[in-house]
Length: 103
Image (tube, rainbow, N blue to C red; front, side, top):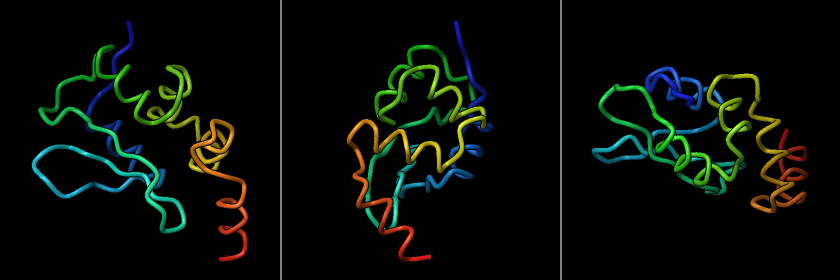
């Protein structure tokens, strides 16, 4: 049974390009090159994130459990996450090319 520390998970997701959404809950949005991609909900009571919420968050982030745990614990970088979103079809290769042309 996995669990994650809520504040550490939020901090790590923010470091990977997620941004806090406005509102009373802990919604985090992922934007790529100005394009809204997805949003996830995180526990707002500073308790550990249990398996139930991990399952919800992994689906919202378009990842399997192991990949989501890597994203939340930092082995998976923002660049690696974007590649996984392309592999899943959430983002297109054109979205990645647009980033290369911007820089």
